[in-house]
Image (cartoon, rainbow, N blue to C red; front, side, top):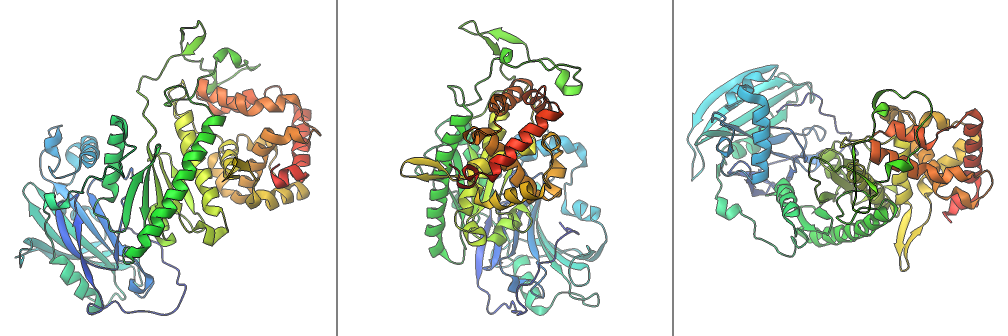
Length: 577
């Protein structure tokens, strides 16, 4: 599918290398999800589809791995595989292609239910909906050769605003397979409006790929069961999560997985350099083992109950009422209570059953691959997705940002992943968006630990230290009273690095500021735990701030600000001790 917002890749060198058929080696690429196999240039990289992707029709995407293979070494081209089912929906698995993996079936079934009769049943229907297209070849029948599939050949141009002239040239081979159509679509930016098609070095590739489709032998595509890799998928829920996750990299060259007690670990390597696989796996084993240890530290600070599936719920009676009127969500009472076995009040459990944490930890071997997968901006080396529950990091973070950066980012983003799970078990049953000062600051706090022979050691954040010192010296920090309830978007757009630094120093002060003594008040010690309790009981982060800082007046805000500034200036803050 054409994307009019595709970014131009900034060149790092002026040299241009021709992509020619004679110099290009080829490989067979199995698109298990669509039941076909194609021939692809060896330097064409297959990208994993983002977990949680809502695309109904797309089954695979391939792009050149190196800029030298882009048009003018600047504009990427791509090959997509789409599938269109022609069955009338019946509300059961008969609506879904029989060779689709179980988790793909579930996703397509849910999407079909939402679309009703508005879904596209054929490639032509889908193409007719695309904007700014000019059809050049309208489904010409072509007989497959040497065991290849027969196909309908389509050619069109689209004004998508991308490339040297804002026009892309597209070809498709559409295969009719029983009650569905599978389309292999190649999308190539033209170099000039006057050109009828791309240069011959590209059309040679297109011609070969378009004619290469053949039916996939499902038995040959089935992966060999590896008990060692699946070792920790030892419950029905974890097995279900692993099956779903594995489909994301099925058939992808340069990707593999293994399991840890609490994580499904994906790791990649340059598929043209198989010897790099062992290094990537070793790195993945190191960071995932450290993440397992860090998870234990998260739990030490934010305990789970005996099942390990939810936070230990606080006694609602330990949360003081706030004086004055409360509006909106904050006005809602706590959930109804029942008596526990020991007579203590307990909150009712969720209506929905809680799931075991077994989320994906994905480690990308190249920054280009990391950015392509997450569409992340330059400079980002890790992220967590609340929708897919996936944690993604770039294995070369140390080379980009200095020694230990990959570990810091893993622990920081790992906290977001854990917090999503921990606070997701709130008694309210609602998804709670934590304030950024708490969530990002706590992420940096855990990112400041390192594992050694005697266990975890807190070192403080060298990454945030200079900016914290500067804001205290200049006085251009955000007042505590304001930043505690800043909207998410403002935190990330108004000098974000500075805001991360302030959030970290606030958390560090509230956790350790008592060591300095000067300006410290006993009630500061209660702030973070009260915030935790209110979020868990009421599912309301705004109310959590109000309760944690209850009865604060102007002089109280001035006092905590001065105590925090003194802490940032102290040696305790600098050395983490």
